[in-house]
Length: 170
Image (cartoon, rainbow, N blue to C red; front, top):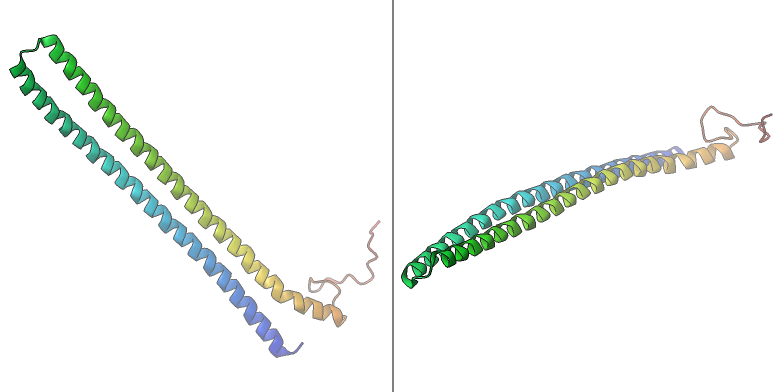
């Protein structure tokens, strides 16, 4: 092989290494950005849940006021009045618990998404290291083959000769 070929192969290996490492870094960066978006969505979901709970409280107070006004004019007995209020309060509490449960479930799911995104980014970055190493091996292999064919070395490791090796060491 001529010197130009060696130079081109070395340049190709360098580009392969750089490209693989950049792709891994970019994937990890994108994964961190995705995770931050998921965390932001989780925060927004909890803020919405707090707003929804506040709205449910306001709705209960308005309904309670309407019920008091109707009860005052209808002449119902106090036990029926308190039973109706207890039912309304239980309904309001159930509605708030449903809002909280749903929000916590959504936040937990978004947390899983964020963790999964970070894991995928780490895996892509790890894979890029192997891709970079593969670029180096692919560039070195023709050199080793050429040296072997020329009889300069019989192994891929420079300076290590296996001439005279029979395959068994007893």
